[in-house]
Length: 369
Image (cartoon, rainbow, N blue to C red; front, side, top):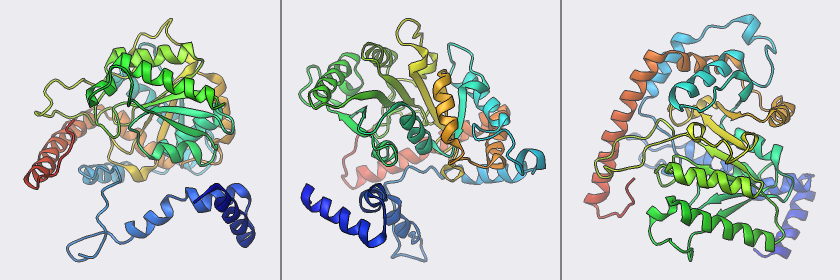
């Protein structure tokens, strides 16, 4: 559809439903869950062979029974904490303390993390939306190296009207294979080229966002590449946003014996590389805890201004503290966590072998990671 036709469609639809222009844009172009709801409401099963098999959503159901059992055991309604406004939209103190301690245990941060560095959100999509709203103006852009998780486009665009600029590698010196997508110098050249083009197009870029471990490629960036990202952001006055939601879902793969291990950006020595107020890490329960439906995540930042900005809109996306404390109980129980992650990675390795064996048997090509 051309620009003229789209303008006419927006105008007629706005008049038909008495919507604002932004509401109409959302209805026509940004309601990604509307069509999904129909297919998800009719899932395939042995008794429903005409149902839909959904391959595009990243959901890990391998540990659902364990998570459900744990939550049932932990639900304990405390009227003062759970039936009042309690500590407000920044999140329950219990979950913020537990999240900070969890990061200390599993992300090995260079500097201690406290409750004042954690802002709870109803999932990572909400975290990205809120953070982008806080640092970008209408029409600004966020750079994301390609290939990228397509949900980022929705998370960045839908409310804040901020553009996602995918950073291409085609034609970049030093790029020839997928391995080069994780190379420090190839990334520097690609990002600088994308920044140059954005400047030529009159677009202000405010942040570089990475998926680490990478979605969709399933690999981790080496430390020197992560440091290069931080260096570029410092040089170009950008925020560095690191989505680390798959941090503990990196499982052993015999086909890739020398895979780069996960190292959080929080653990890097970035003193003198980037101002800590420009470095933000995102995490959530959906992937590592096999619990997309809990709708819980958080922003970890040392930027007090961003914390205040997030708080100003947090009342509109305030997840129940009762649910927050259910996740907090998981994070607090170190013995349960160790056993949970150990079993999860074992099952992921087994199921990866099943899936790749199936693809090989039917001659379906894929990229292993």
